[in-house]
Image 1 (cartoon, rainbow, N blue to C red):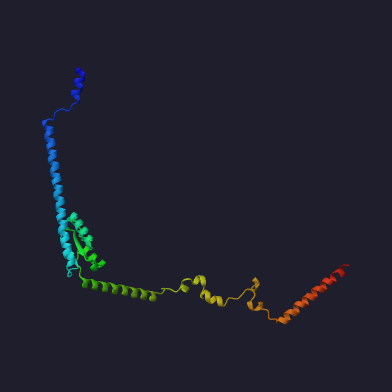
Image 2 (cartoon, rainbow, N blue to C red):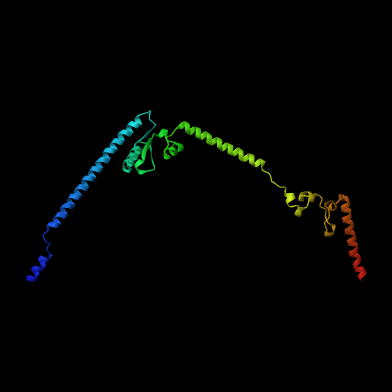
Length: 229
């Protein structure tokens, strides 16, 4: 009986000490502070989103404005502004190299920026349409001049030396093409000029000769048995 009672008492939780009660109290306070901070952060995001929605609506209604540039803001604020502009049907971009200097620009769809304009903002420059047009014309002029220069170089390009002088020890003083006109067939190797291969007989002469050969062959064939007997 005593052993059973002792085992039951040992299995029961001991009453909390002063130290454990203090740690639990601090944990509850910390959890309450975190919850309060989360609620505060959530409320700030909602207020900022509401403010951006109002500004974006005003920007859309203002026909005199084609784009709007905002001051540098944090990553969360930029994300909210991008989301609001997308819902409103606008185009938005973030520019700036350093995180603390990055800002957002909004553009109306009908005034979407060109690649040159975006490149200027990425380089930290102000966009000047007149200056950009001058640069574009200069660039086109440079391309035309380079193309004309390359064509001129191709027409003026010629070998510094004559290949005949360079390979005179191989082809002689006359070129191979010139030597081909004076080449004569060597009769010792059975080369016959094409003119000698032509049949100059008429059709009647050729037929008569063929008939004569046939008659001669028949006569020879008919005379062969009698001579053998």
